[in-house]
Image (cartoon, rainbow, N blue to C red; front, side):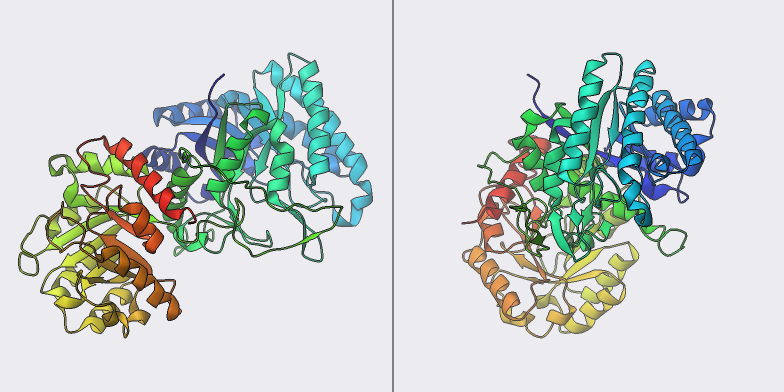
Amino acid sequence: MNEFRLELGLKTDPIEYRYSLPWLFRLLQEIGVRRVQLGTFFELYHLPDEWFIQLRNTAADFGLDIASLFTAHRELGGLLRPNPAWHAVARSNLRRLVEVGALLGCECVGHNAGAVMRDEMGRKADGLRRHVDFMKELLDYAGTLGVECLTLEPMSCPAEPPATPEEIRRIGEELGSWAAAHPTASAFGYCADVSHGVIDADGTLLHPPLEALEAALPWLRELHLKNTDARLEHTFGFAPEEIDRGIVNPEGIRDFLFEHAGRLPVTRLTGYLEIGGPKLGRDHSDPELERELRESLHFLRRTFSAARSPAPEPDHRMAAPTDGAPVPVSHDRDGPLQGAPAARVQTAPSVMCCDLRRTGEEIRRLEALGVDWLHFDIMDAHFTPNMPLGLEIIRQLREITRLPFDIHLMVDRVEFFVDQCLELGANRISVHVEATPHLDRVLGRIRDAQVEAGVALNPATPLTVLEWCLERLDFVLLMTVNPGFAGQKLAPGAVRKIGECRRRLAERGAERIRIQVDGNVSIANIPRMVQAGATDLVLGTSSLFRHTGSLEDNWAQTRAAIGRGLQPD
């Protein structure tokens, strides 16, 4: 039996009328995401065959596979309407959708069934029967074109069927059985969305998203990945600023799917990031799309499509209604659809620990792993007795990567280096409290440039120095060795200091401030550092860059060590 695996892909919706498909293909090639779900656009139903053949070839030139075609709107819902003219348009466009999918070489072609008008809900049964009956014709037609599977998307309200677990199972059983009885037809499947559940008009959660996902399991062929709030009202991605306000935990979804892999009809399942992106058609918002896609895809690679930890798995089911009683919407953040880990740990490989003879190649490998930051230790041989990296390496690397730059200044002339690093494109900068008498002014300068500001503390520097600059801080960098050199032993009391820092921040209502640790962040030390409260790890020669293993093997062990640190006591 083939081993079950999850893959990560992207649905193309957010570039619609904003960027070209080659622009997106180039970005995905750079990130290392190979599977694409083409979202529909209004012109798709009228473009000639040659256009899609060329698009397929263009994707292949970038090493990408357009594995799926799926509606981006509710444009194929005419069969739910009472007017025969709408039926004819829906049938024609559904056939064309299948033809386009065949031209693109898609494994799956899918759509949502559309919406029953809320003032015509009495016509729902007739409309849904019409749609299901035509799906059988469409499955037969798709089979003649070589399309492997047609998928339908469960939605979030009774006006957009199927939505309830009962509807999902009933339609799945009918269409799945019909397809199985017609060997030349395409298979039937669901493209489930991890953010879709059912909340009634009173705001009561009737069917949690996991309940809908479980109902779809026997027919699950593909997945839409997005984040949502507790009321399932707004959807968004997994950029850092979006994770805390969302309830979807991709790691929990991953574990749930592995636990129930035996119920799925496939051994390879692709989850496609499906987001709308920032406000369309604004000079200040459109350029933000690339950052949102990069950050969301990197996060999903580390969580959804990453290998599972060998630790015992808990029961991840969300509470489901019992005896027909509604379940109130909960803001609790436990379980696979109730938020990311409370302190999502970010990784920042130290550039000075790379093989500097092949720095560009090393950066590409780090990008492929899905690290969060690149960490630069800038020293001046005065504040520390070393000077491994200079400003020029920041300048040159800024031109070849979009990973955010985390710059740790171990220098005497703090203000000079801050200005230089801001000009070079730093995304966050930490300065040593021991190096400047004007800490408040320096932190203000960094923040005024819309860059994250941090204070770095040597091992013997007391935490009390943070008291009057908390309002200026985004993070604290705790040196767990004396600054200057890689490969040192952990300073005595370093882990205790991490815990004390977390406690002090919590007491002052400053839990938002992250704690970065730098120095002997080893595979052995990571679990207790994370348990103590570290949220950001500078990775060096005792973890990611160990000479005893490959970068990829070291990364896997580092992630496993982080996982152990996040386990409850």
